[in-house]
Length: 310
Ligand code: CP
Ligand code: NVA
Image 1: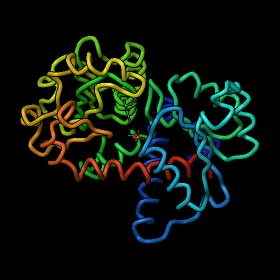
Image 2 (image 1 turned 180 degrees about the horizontal axis):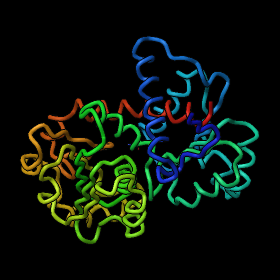
Image 3 (image 1 turned 135 degrees about the horizontal axis):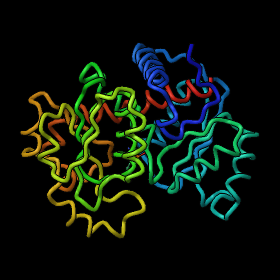
């Protein structure tokens, strides 16, 4: 029997296919109960600390609400109003918080900071986004693909845009879960070589295809799922204008959609900049899928917390 109690959730690479299936099953079970009107308070009296060094709407609210619905509570820690922003070492923050709370969520820039927090904390640490990864997002995305397509195995997912944290986590998920992933980016904005190698090494099925192209049209052919994200991530605000030029041919629009399978769906982790990475008409055409993807953050987070804390 699988138990993930006490485990950190800082990258999908640390989990086997069976363990990710277990988290997904738990999240679907929790979602079903929630929709039926009664969450089981499995995290009663448990507390989640949430450190956010970057902005957030979905991640923060879905963790906070999820914790409350499972019977627990959360404490939001802004670096500006705690000693974190005044330079208290992360290893000390880790040990202090471990004496108060049952898990720590962190959104920050450097993946190493999350690793350091996890190393020194005696409670589970959850990665709520770094420059390198966004694993909690991808659990919600996998739920959405399963709901829409019935499976992950053999699905062709094409990500169009920047080779960023979301692209990295999608690649790793694809490798482990047997989903073919194509990443279409401008040449200078591809995913990191180390992530390509890592994803290749994590394949659970040698037939899974992980592919990299520099043309959105080439990538879109035969896709079951088209996915995009912002062209300038948090922390890249100063590059935004240059990126708009570099990515101008990489918009997810009707022309791209026409090349995908006729029943293809469009996904976006949000926030979206309509008219940039996605056209307004394609966004609205798939708004039901996109907002069910964002709702699934709530159910996914509850699944992750129940798995590592309970
Ligand atoms: N998709 C996502 O992580 O959204 P937030 O930045 O609003 O948390
Ligand atoms: N790549 C984006 C994701 C936002 C949820 C960012 O890091 O800003």
